[in-house]
Amino acid sequence: MDIGGRLRAVREARKLSQRDLATRAGLTSGAISMIEQNKSSPSVSSLKALLDAIPMTLSEFFQEVENAGPPKYFYSTSEFIELSPQEIGLGDGAARLSLRQLGNASEHSLQILHENYPPKTDTGPDLLSHEGEEAGIVISGIIEITVDDQVRVLNPGEGYLFDSRLPHRFRNIGDRPCVIISACTPPSF
Image (cartoon, rainbow, N blue to C red):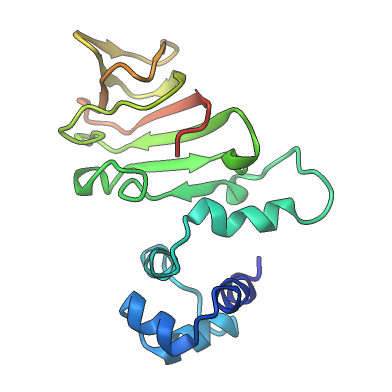
């Protein structure tokens, strides 16, 4: 993917100079120039800072790439989109979580995630609540899930399905990573 070219196109469409964007994002205009020329690859945190300064989400940034060309039906693992837990409202405590999205959820009525919870991580102290329904199956490890007033520890092969408007939380209470494949409809991130 031409991240530099995409960033330049977005910046110019918003009528921002490299200097304007650098000031907003807390980076140097030289760093932005190097990224736009694809001479430097931005870290996820730098790209997020740049997009926050525009403002634009990671999903929106990568959306045009997916929409170009013929319809896309199949994805390699390297084509999943890593969502930032902080960007989707999970807070700093969830920084170690990996939430990888299949495709561009804004183009579909279903969102699929490959979730990875390292040992002793969770979605944060505050219970989550959003429109939709979500479901998932534990692939490996264990996860403690709170939904409303119910708490359950799920093992590999077990799953969940609930109304996402109910307050909920995910917490890996084990000493091994927990991997979950989940779905949410409509997409919420």
